[in-house]
Length: 115
Length: 111
Image 1 (cartoon, one colour):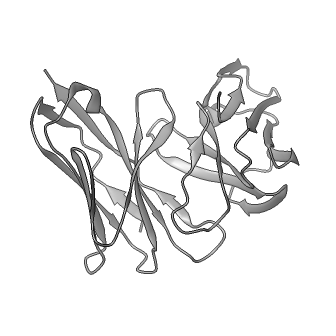
Image 2: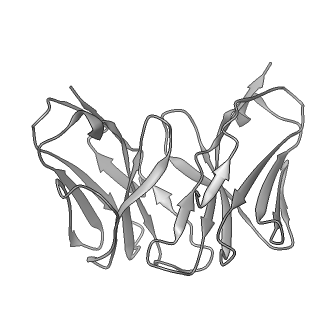
C-alpha cells in the first residue's frame, strides 16, 4: 500500500503548456507539502497545506497554483511552463505542521522536463 | 547564509570502512534534527532522528552538538547498499516554514 502517491512519475512537455501533478496520501495526515528538487539536488519547500488550508507559500511564481480539495489530496497546477521549471517535484505529508519530531513521508517524485 | 550546510562530497569509501558526515545549522533556535537518506532517482526517506544525547541504530550513530551547532552521522562497517545521498534536516519552532534541508552528502561505497 503506497502511503503517498503522486502522478505522473514522468512528465515531458513543451514550453508554454499547462500541466498538473496529483498527490494523494492514505496516512490520515493533516499536512501536505510540495517540494522542488533541482539539478543540484537542493530540496526546496514550495507550499504546505494543513487540513486544506494554505500555511506555507514560499517565493514561487504565481504560475504555480496548489489545490487541496480535501486533506488527503494536494495537487499542483503549473501554467505557462518554462525551461527553468524542469526539476523533480516531491509531494510529502506529515501528521501535523511544526510538531516536534515530525517525520515526512515523501511520494516517489515527478520528473518534469520542459523542452 | 544557508540554514543548513553540508559537504556535498562525494565520499568514496571501501566496503567495511567507517565514514562520518557533518552538517552545520545557523539557527540556534533549531529544535529537531534528522538524517534522511535519498537513493538515486528516489524519494528521501527518514534514516534516523538525532537526539540531544546522541543515538545509535545498528551501524549508524547520530550526534548533536548544540554549542557548535552541528550534527553528525557515523556509519560503521560500510555496505555497498549504504551508497546514497544523506540529507541533513533541521526543524526550528519559528515560522510556518520551519523545516530546512541540506543539499546532501553523496556517499559511494566501493567493493
